[in-house]
Length: 353
Image (tube, rainbow, N blue to C red; front, side, top):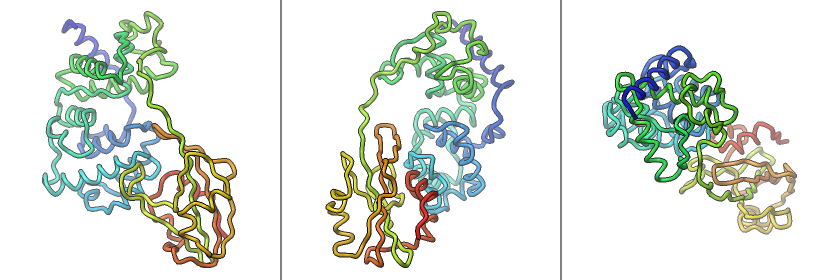
């Protein structure tokens, strides 16, 4: 691409951004901790969803040192509802590493930032360009969308060829003088103007050169290869209510999306099960054996919860019993534990007698 066109593209975007950017707390000052926190939260999450979490985090952990000294349960509890909990665990791990091993100072280059746990290509480019003025281009969903439409590129963005092609193009276009503003400008345009559905092309500052607009091809770009097959899993939670208001709660260990969160005992099944099948499950038998119990299904229709590659269909089975040797938690304390959003939503509605 000729240098003049490169400059015109980046200058138009930066000028537009400085006049139209949203007022967001991590933009007030280029503090690495704030920029890092916002970028981790905004992965797979819209700005309006992330903002309340960001404010809660910086109120609870105003400085990186505060986050580093927190216990994991507190971090996960604040993260509850954002999903992708490995991001919170990595955030906590890296905060401790930066404080304890790097004297509380974030690395100031893309290459050094990449060495930190949970910081990949995109986040390293964002922090290094916004906070340290390093001309390293970010490439996220918004950038893919803007560039694929402007240049009418039909290479799938999630293919090996597409990842390389878009990364090289983004790097070619970046402003050397104002890389942080440029990166934020492209992402801002993608988030507010060049949207996935119904883009506001008439308001776009670069619409005069957009090839997709010229060819009326916006709705077909960016191109993505076929998605991974979605698997459906049925979750059956065992919710115990005893006469002395105690329940069974367990911590998820090992690998998994909800690692280190707490949950009711869980029976997973590939198909929906009824009560007759439920009481024959080995986990159910191991907990209750010959205990005196009554069973009530809380929700007849399974609650649907979508993850990236899974559809979760959930039932909550209420088991009332006078007492049980497995009871380990008071109901009054359950809101102190970080739990998956499925269980958090259930707890907001469930009333035990």
